[in-house]
Image 1 (tube, rainbow, N blue to C red):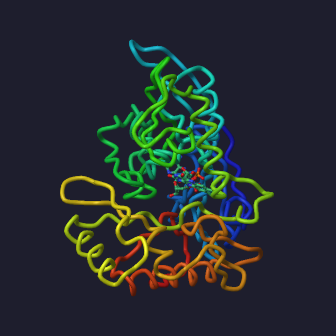
Image 2 (cartoon, rainbow, N blue to C red):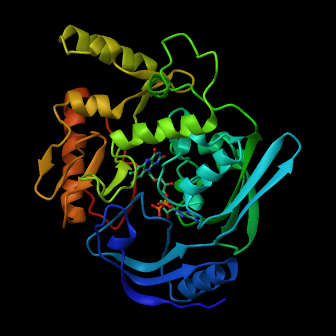
Length: 362
Ligand SMILES: Cc1cc2nc3c(=O)[nH]c(=O)nc-3n(C[C@H](O)[C@H](O)[C@H](O)COP(=O)(O)OP(=O)(O)OC[C@H]3O[C@@H](n4cnc5c(N)ncnc54)[C@H](O)[C@@H]3O)c2cc1C
């Protein structure tokens, strides 16, 4: 264990958005003793601690972060059979996508639709990452965490993680628990999950029929990657939209009755597509609307630009640093998009990425 704290470390290159100022102090924690030493160091100085994985879901403010940023890098991957399941345990610092590739290669089902999501294993339970009908919560068995108050480690069972749509206790109480490792329960020889309409379409399934021969895990993984590439939702430096944090807004969850009233109003106003306004069941009396659908109908198109920031040319939910942008510019654009949706539909969009010292613009 060695504690090497650096000062004034630029954070922009460590995030996928590529914006924001430096960390006043920065350390990489490869193991638990280094993490504990770093937390004690910050505590002795009364400094707040910020946990960084792959930086794909963080907006750093232009003045940077006045505290200690701990880059979480514990490694290690282990597959072991337990009864009907394969337990896959990976260190928080492992990169998520290669782990999915390895699970699929071994014929382990449960994470194939989550291929291509950027970032680290440690962050996957934080916002319960999800895509194409699958989410981390479907397979997370336990999350090994270090409690920053007691500096003790514990294995949180999935039920104690409070998973919800892009949510968990880890997200609701930032900095309280540090993820050291995650164990997923995968199904050896299991079939892929193909429930999402867009994924079914990509695999050539008709509206009602599944093919006689189901696709392999790898065919599903490849289909997901094709869909993601078309939306610039893969990290590809050659893609003009690559400096983003993925979806900037979550899909709003509203009362079923409110969604029905909105649909009726839009139909009466003759809004094109009102008839097929997306609304998916999201628990008792609730539905999840599509933030992208609302943004587009609020008059914001793909490729919309405000100086050095813009809306992705391939996906209206992603806000993009077009080069040299500031956090202030990005947040001004975000406020404009959010305000447009609110003015048009009376619905408030929530931001998906985490803000570290970025300007409050709403
Ligand atoms: C192109 C693109 C596409 C994306 N597509 C999706 C998608 O389809 N679905 C989806 O859900 N997300 C998506 N995202 C968002 C992002 O990839 C995920 O949220 C990812 O899990 C973030 O991982 P990270 O390691 O980069 O986390 P970071 O951005 O580094 O951190 C995110 C949050 O997690 C916390 N955190 C990080 N590591 C730890 C740890 N070890 N312990 C405790 N807290 C920690 C941070 O403090 C921060 O609050 C996308 C992002 C991009 C850029």
